[in-house]
Structure formats: C-alpha cells, structure tokens
Length: 273
Image (tube, rainbow, N blue to C red; front, side):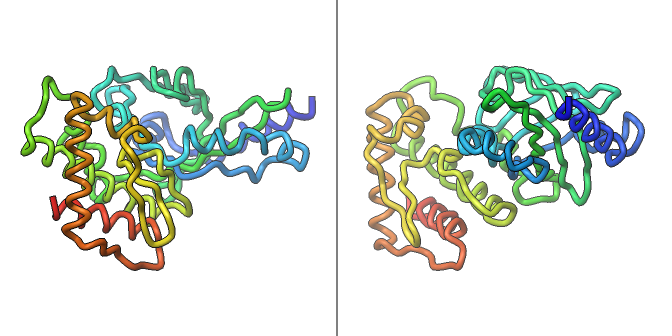
C-alpha cells in the first residue's frame, strides 16, 4: 500500500513538472535521443538492495542507446537502422508507450517527468526481488545542430545494410571506414555527455584499455563479423584493420579522457586505410 501511494505521488510530480499542452509535450518528446543513465535517487535503502542485482544488466540493456521518436509515430534505433520500425504514442496522462521488436522495447511504458535543457526524465518501474522499483531514466536530446545528429542519418548508417554479395577490397575499405567514423563520432558524443561508456555499443573488434586498445580475434568479435557478407570478407576486413594499425606505427592519442582517445584512434585508422 505504501508503494502504491509513493508511486501515485511520483506520478503527480510528473504531471506538475512536465507542463504544456498536448502538442507542446509531443514536440518536446519527438526527436533523436541518447539514453544517459538511470537515476536511482528515489529508491529507499531496501529498494536499493533489491535493485543492486539487476542494476548492471539494466544499464547494459538501455544505457547509451540511441533512439529516434519520429514525428510520424515511428520508433527506430540506429543500431537497427534497416529493420522494421516500431511505434511510439503519448497519452493524455503523459504516459509514453513504445512498441518495438528490439531488445527492451517490446512494450515499454514510461511516464514523462520533466524536460529541461534538452534532457528528458522518464519514470519507469521494474520488478526486482518481488518488489516494484521506480527508476528515472535521463535522456539527452540530440538536436539537428548537434554534431551527433549524423549518427541518426541514413548516410552514416549505410554500413549496417548487409551486403548483397561478396565485396571487393575497395568496397570493404569503404565499409570499414564508415564503421570507424560512426564509432568515433559516437564515442566523442558519449565522452561529452556521459560519465561512462559501453564497448558493446560499437561493433569494432577491440578490447579497451587505459591509453590503448587491443585487437580481438575474429572468433571473439561476432558483431563485427556479422557486418560483412561472409567469413572471408570479415577476415579481409580484419587484415585491413591490422594494416592500418601498422601504418600509424602503433601511435595512440593521449588525452585525459580515455573515450576521446579511442575516438581519435578510430579516426586515425580510418585515415590510414
């Protein structure tokens, strides 16, 4: 009973903080988004204890994903650019409902809490240890004048379209260059907007270290291999990466921010292909 009262209070808070008529609210929510982090400030000590076992998996699932809530009501993600889009809808009680075939969004229901300085706060509830926990997700809006806007465009996501047949070296270099440039821009954005990064959000076959990266084997990089038509093309692409690393003589950028170092390294490799 206490939890129901508490959630009712939170939903009332949502209605108070997210002001504006229906069209204004829809305009604020429509656009391109980067999911930043879950805010667990509303959790009690007992709820935090119940939340702890699922925290990492929740952040892995949603953290730092890119989302598009389009004006026509369609829902897409750059990670699944050429897949069938899902849908999104706003209701009068400022409830956001997303339906998609992609992980975590089969039926996603959240309440709008606030929108300020291009940051949207959503209230969701998750089940953990027989408890219903209120979690606030913070999203950053990527407007059309933001450099990261390119991450959502077809031009920058063409490499995700699976080849119709085996590709020659020239085509492989172009595909690999696009992957490196997309990943560089994504990591630059994450470095500027977040306090952590997720290696799984890019398909490049690297292990990440302090002031350096290491190349994985193809067997340990299935997401990278899946971008190419077949294993032979994936092996060729891996060799192209190795050659590019030799051309820059193993040099690695130096910065106070590891993620910006990775981003610049990707740019250097793209230029060396």
